[in-house]
Length: 94
View 1 (tube, rainbow, N blue to C red):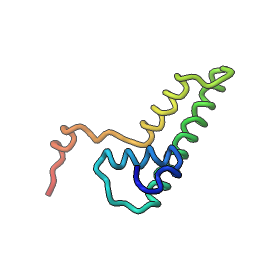
View 2: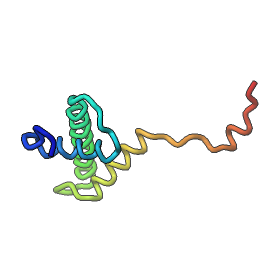
View 3: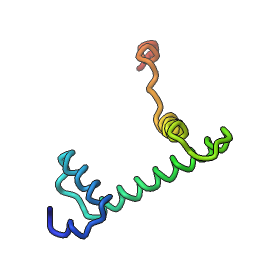
């Protein structure tokens, strides 16, 4: 373990390990905190949406289907597919 890692929270160690596994060796220490903030915010958003879906379905508690639906809706909202290649081939560029 690197110096100071023993005092680092478990989630921060995971982020550091992920960065290392991707070949990222040189970064500012605040990068770990920024990833953690993004990670926590994403989890809260997903669980909040899952709770809404669960309540809408009349369930007493969130289940895995609610979480999966919340994640899928985030993916569908955040990322869009590019148009098919045929669309670009039909456009006359100058």
